[in-house]
Length: 170
Image (cartoon, rainbow, N blue to C red; front, side, top):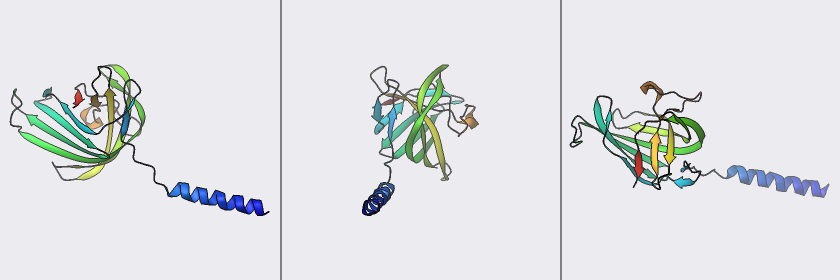
């Protein structure tokens, strides 16, 4: 009888202790080769044609904080942006998802969080898909096309189509 009480108390203590520990926020992502890497640092795209304008993007990751800066240009030279938008995001990386990049199926990372845009200063949920290609020796990020931009989404709302422009880790 005494052993059952001790066992019950120890089990209860262990359960309470394990439940009181918060799971750390995952901010690492799987790459195309199966490596798990930190996203921390600056990632930048070249200036590319995008619908009726040109743009470049900068992703600044620091732990669970991400600041995306998007510059839109009407000039070919991509100097003096016409519009600059900053999106501030608190995020975490979830499980993987199959996504399409240029007609090829890749294994990407689901990313969720909360975002605030400088465009309208509204906060809301953030659901995105990041694919990290490390085959060339340089980490290159591709991100999802949102459903309202014509991309396919999973049943839980994550993009399944990826923009074909590269965002390289510096």
